[in-house]
Image (cartoon, rainbow, N blue to C red; front, side, top):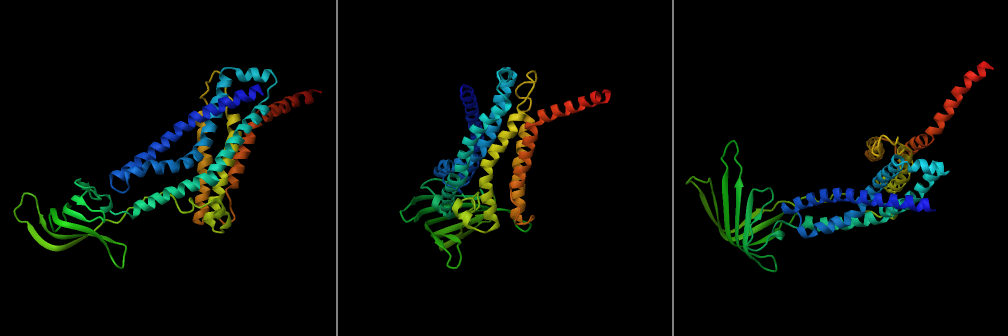
Length: 373
């Protein structure tokens, strides 16, 4: 029991440390992406941390198996390097018992991963998608602030308003935009100044327009004297359509119960994927224990690279098979289970490799003895 507590503490502490590092990498990447959307005016900066918070369960679901896989390699590698494993074996602590202790911890973590995959992650994705949906419905005018220059989408112009009323009525509007040069015309600058403005929507389509009232429009080439001034009582310009912010399909936001009640191929594969993550946790544990066997003189990091490559081959194989089934390249009856069985077989071969080699040596050594007799 003392050894079990010792191994559990070591494995869980290393798993936590590695998981935090992997989470920081994923979160920082998404934060940069969301920040770029906020800087371009596609989403409000206030919702960035809310979206990241809802996506953390999905990140954790993917990082926990890899973190525990690395934790087993690093922890057992240290035991081999510092000869603690030799002492344990000399005291009658077999590798089979070591594997059973490790599987107990892996089973506990697989339940956590399964809970995240089946229940928590879909809820988080659904709430994040709701935030994205609200942001996509906002136009450029909804993000304007009083007495602040706002860059138009595409970076080809700016807008400035003196004040905004409660019903989003704009007062003293200034707009500046550039028209790119073509083969038949030179590039020009357009300035529009109006007393007021409001957002309107087309009757038959979802297109939105900025309608300006009582102002003038100036168009010309900077440095030239031939420019055109147009006075207007009402002037309309089409607003840029909202950009799509959603990152996940509607299937990812569906509850597990809804996926179970569905007969669509995409939903059935998505359900299998959610069950595959906790299964993967157990199988990579079976892979990690034999892969952690190292020569004390080679160092604890000797097999990290090939082990990580094997892990990613496992993950990529699952993703590839899932994509092929969803695309219709494979029959509908095919599941993700063959990939799990292949890597389970590899794990069993690695676990019993020493015993298999020992039996082969004994068998080889027995042939000369039988011939001499």
